[in-house]
Image 1 (spheres, rainbow, N blue to C red):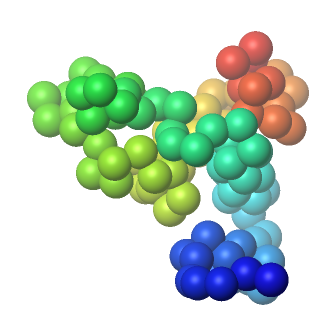
Image 2: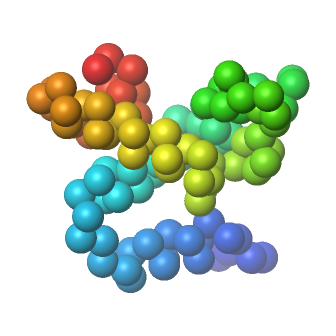
Amino acid sequence: MKYGYSDEEDLNEYELKREIKDPKQRWVIRIIRSMKDYYKKCPYYDIRSGECFIKFNVEDNKCPRDGKYEGCPILEEFLAERYEELKKKGRPIPYDFRDLAIF
């Protein structure tokens, strides 16, 4: 029996109810879900300094979400760009987050 309130339950329930027709958006959501299996915080987040490795070349590279990756626009945009790169090169699209580093 669960007590309390969790935002993650509502987010997952919402994602299950909505139908996403765009294959790129479906892939981004699948990769973020697989991240949840392996990491508590975003793997592109530096806990000590609070910096985002995706925005590393930008002057203000602090993570606005403190390592929470559900609904992070920066992470979603990064994954969408990665999807486009893989499609353009004709490479297979990875199914899991850990496979993303191989391609």
